[in-house]
Length: 107
Image (cartoon, rainbow, N blue to C red; front, side):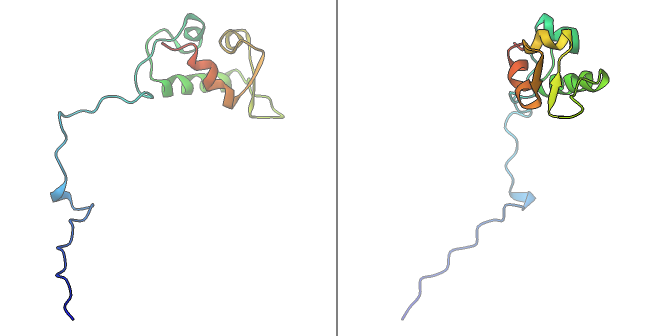
């Protein structure tokens, strides 16, 4: 009985000599890192300059912590002050709803 000849081993994925060079250099920014302009309501919290979505969320969290707007009994709930209420459109929101409200204020 004869066996078929073995195929040569494929190059390992971790072999740095086999990596392809980057085409064109820098990648295009992802949707998260693309600078977006905040609405006037959101600009009152994060500033008027264009920011990446991740930076906007970070600055809003800084604002929430600085002004102690988290519900002490339920840390997932944010009690909006007048500036945040203009962004959220309601007096309270959960941290999971926050991104939905922020998306409406970014272009």
